[in-house]
Image (cartoon, rainbow, N blue to C red; front, top):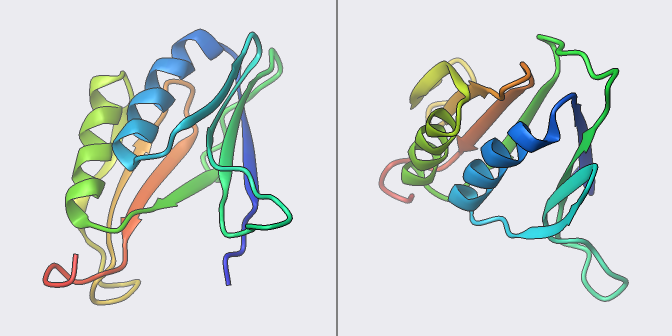
Length: 134
């Protein structure tokens, strides 16, 4: 079961956020589906004929406030992709909050990295596969 259809987050400065999310989403292989003056979206929207997708919207909001408990996690098919997303996020101005590595407290193959975007939203990228199957 795929639990989420889409997720929306807010930022105060979309111009800065665009650079970060474009870099991370490109490393994930998620395509940009729209770019409007006050919002940008990535992923793939669902349809009546195909509902196996999800997407992320990033909206500009002057009232947006960072919250350490807000957390969005993106799934990847390989550990290399986790590392690529982490590096892309750092190059685009994000800050590391946990370098790529195995997190055995979740399960033996849980390989993840954590970032904060330029406004403090916490982003995780995870691969659930073992190194051999990734």
